[in-house]
Length: 195
Image (tube, rainbow, N blue to C red; front, side, top):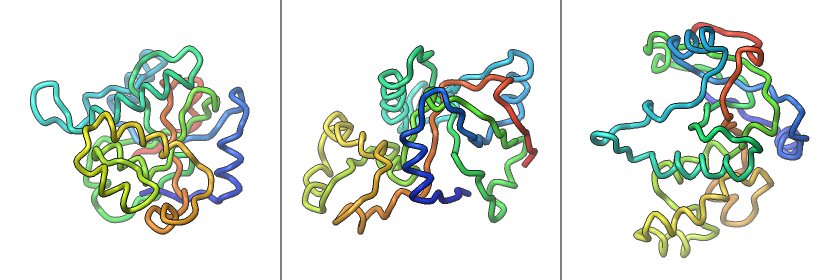
């Protein structure tokens, strides 16, 4: 579903001025598109996270951590959960996504200063409550560590620079960049495609 980004584009994007607009692509439900059309703006909502029980989620620590990163990096941050997007148009293969009814892909141009960029692949470490380590020994040492200790390593998913050594062997290079956007306004929408 994701599309890779070149090294040159990735490094340029990471250093782009906050006012420069970046084209992003986000997959949303048609009800979210309706809200956007009615209200002129939508923010992210946690209700779409995986539920374990009433009000609980396996993913909440990672989502809350990302919201904290947005609060540190985005001037005027709303405090909402992010709108998840990619900086390259996602490609859809197979029937899994097409089997879900009522989805749309929204293409928008959003100021770079209203988003936090991260490595799509490494983001799955926070999402699954893993640490992001520099070597195998560190990874093994952190395996049973409390989530608060693991969270101290998660900032590495925000690093879009080249990797070397064990990290490059284990994780590869940053090929897919995701954007966590602080809301989406109707005037930022360029195109909507039904999926």
